[in-house]
Image (tube, rainbow, N blue to C red; front, side):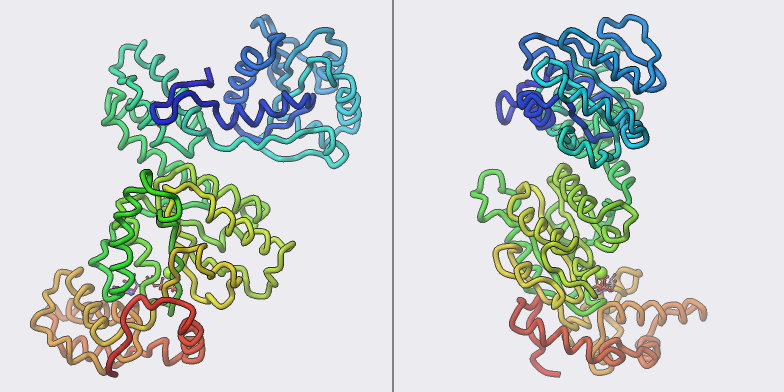
Length: 511
Ligand SMILES: Nc1ncnc2c1ncn2[C@@H]1O[C@H](COP(=O)(O)OP(=O)(O)OP(=O)(O)O)[C@@H](O)[C@H]1O
Ligand SMILES: [Mg+2]
């Protein structure tokens, strides 16, 4: 059942099946599958037994609470972890033994570890395979050579399509209207990509509850459900934001670049891989619109936006940073097409060397390779304040399509940012003589302009009257811009970027 017809690619074998198959074909008797999805492993093993192994070995399963369940569905026998290993050792026929949550017993009990080492020898070439599943990757050091590790990533398109077909058949038997045509099933699989099979099942049930049927129109509900589930990890966030390109003031060159690349990105499936836009690195002075621009990219490309916070990766809250980062990159890949935003990508670099061998060096090495190999449906937008902290190879051409520098806004840009923020708050800027603010706002960031608009508006609302030029002017006087308080830092960023990055907007012609 894991070989299915994919309307785009023909007959395929799922990635998970492929990973396990390699272990069985290599004759590895002790296999450790790191995954929370026991049901999925069970299905894979059934498949493996029926399809790959000529002797069609039966699949047994054991857990501490249910005991040992025989393959024929007969009654279970309550056996301790050590006793189940004895049972396998004495068993005289080929078989696959699925042991759940066995990491605990392997780690805590020296007797269990010894028995496993004995079993390794005993089961070699005997047609007996022990497959342990656990959500935690905990293999005692002394078993490292005997136990083969398989990381089960989120199911691929093939596995998902197959799973949805099975679920759809079940749902239609219950009397619901279900569209099981290949294009619809495939579109649903695309929508659910990135989720586990259990999560996919919940998403399908919820879509069914909302709509009463499962068809092309249910896809929107499936995507909504996925957004909720991806957010749950805490490492990747779905950003619901509708900032349009016209809500970003200035940055003319950056906008023109994006509009050109949008077309290429849309046609990505029919283009050669070198010209499909891969991503952007945006650096610049804090508060000048880096985050804002990334949000606008997602709307411009009509794609969902996912953010990976580098500070979260290094926080230790998600385990080892290397593993957390790799996992996050893989997950976002499976939710493509999307824009993925690495915020403050230089985070965690201060005080560390970045040499390969350190966690940081490994993370960047992985990132650079991943940028080259990732699926073409993913557009990467990385933002950084201190780009000078990044390894040189990260900035070099070829990794990102372009490195943009967002400088302090020019006079014209500042006026445009004022207009945007006034309009956003329902005020027509026409009569406000904004050009008179050009001088006083010299050296301001976009964020400071927004702050000025907000404080002027707060004043007039308190006095219950309409906004005048004087209110903005008055608020402006009390703003002390970052470019003054942190002059050296701002100058440093600007001079560093001078010949290393492309400006996001034209230079100021007069000041
Ligand atoms: N070019 C701009 N056009 C319109 N608004 C802007 C612009 N630049 C900044 N702003 C306003 O300032 C706020 C802060 O900008 P943003 O978060 O994009 O800055 P940033 O460059 O990401 O800063 P940081 O380095 O602190 O993360 C935005 O939410 C927006 O309201
Ligand atoms: Mg930001």
